[in-house]
Length: 307
Image 1 (cartoon, one colour):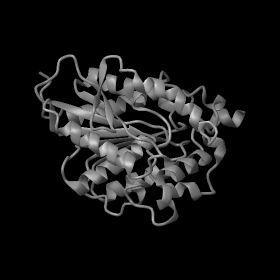
Image 2: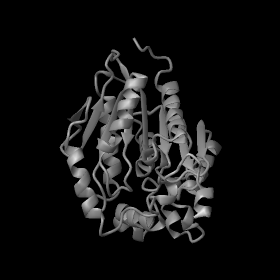
Image 3: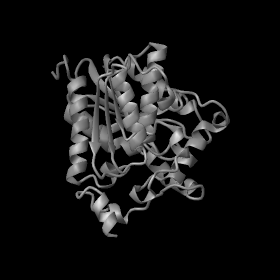
Image 4: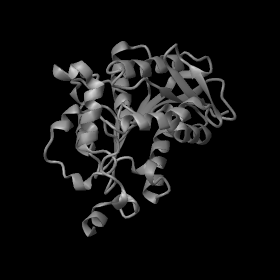
């Protein structure tokens, strides 16, 4: 127990009580059922709007909108197998209220029923829809997400570059899930992990990759496999040192920097996966979220008017 206290950030007081794993084959169904109700309820202060027959978004608009508003498209966590866009309500509401921009969370379809590329294509459909809204400035759209949503946001930046239709100005990647090859590592100390374990990771990647897991993994499915990272939008990337994804995130950040992409890497000593959500009132969590807001404000409100 003494070791557990020493390896985690002192602000994160719940760390030693939290489980290392959260989602398994048996709990997948019940977890989905519990989250389904929140997905159907309209968000407080926001609306649910439809992108197409399959994809909806939860939209938060500022009280005093601009003629052309900057916007954020946020992609929720959940390992690509659980979760809903409603999980991002607080994040999107805060971004909209504090930065005076439109914030949108996409309800993408989940694996294993909908493996790659469906979740990514759903996110891309939401991005195109957002860019085409008459009240949105298409030249000031940021994309972002946490955990699996961060991985989808990184892939979305790559897909947007390939298709050259919408050009996001920033990618905010919070402890993103980027590399399926982490599932084969044997050198990770499980005692440092909380919330997301190797078992969780293997379950998620198998579900998302589907039949492609037995062959060459498409780079857009696992952004860490993508060779050319040049010409991507600037990135703000955050991760804790006790996060399963720490090494893959740091490696991806280094590759972005080497490719000439403007990049900020925010490392949180002793932080576990999802720490800012589970212990959101902790000082280190509040600081982490403020850094995200600062990055978004600097880009979305640059050369734009709040009036």
